[in-house]
Image (cartoon, rainbow, N blue to C red; front, side, top):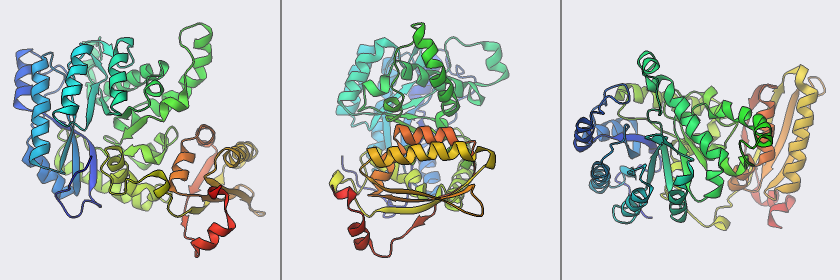
Length: 442
């Protein structure tokens, strides 16, 4: 899919995958259904010109629109919202994309709407609520919808809605957006993982909102309990790596370097996406948040290499808008070289060395794109480790980060590492490097 950006600075513009459309028809439908306050708080006002104004001020090139919660029961209201989003995209080329809403829990109607949205409205993807009237993502009856979306290699944006059922007293004391939305997102995604939905439909690219909610801390527990659950027949075999490979994560909400590092324990930098959640927060607050993100993605040595990826490159590639969308053999590019500087907590040194040795060995044995992983230890301070890392290309490096053995190393050593620096090194002579390391040519 080709798209011409309206601004000449599109290469540097931020790509926002998490913003919401709230139309007058949508509000009217909710009012008629007596559901305006279903989520526990009034819906904010949406104005396309105000949205564009904020985007220009904040340096955002493109925003992806999805229908806000709650979801109307009326399929007509959903169709009107999708057509309104398509019109905004047409009126402002390069500035707005949209993911269409579907009239669930009617699966047959949802497939028809998805086909209409993708084929006639040229939707850029699909938005799915965590649940609609108690029908949660991962439910068996949704498999036919996933099969259709898999055929279309669709991008699917998830968003939390009010849980079903819900405790009204708890909801009044702790509004949904404050905590339950995170639980709801984790609940829905966990339900999909235990049924292997992502890996059974691998062409579907799922964007999980709000930094993955509680998923980064829930996954280790799920993995540890899975064998017990399987012995009793409560769950079947779960392909953890295959499932996670299809998940992307937006950073809308309370982002921070620490939160991003936690998220990177279950995914790779190529699956992180910027999100604003406009118009649910004041533009000035969103601008400050984006400015703060730009700053720490510049200042934090371990995150700085991924700044442009997070702010726009990952999303451009995901939505098929990358100007460098070339064939794999054309994307090889220069080798990635760096020396990882790791300070290990002394009492965990022996355990760390054993885990690090295993991941180094498996990476060299199983990954053609890993040219060199050479660990070194200081004589004076043995808990200071240096690792010479050389990868055949950026693509090989990103593939390495997604492997099961690296994820096991990442999650297993988080508490052992006191400090980590990942400075990129520039070879003075790329051609000589290629003569020395020929492994990636085999």
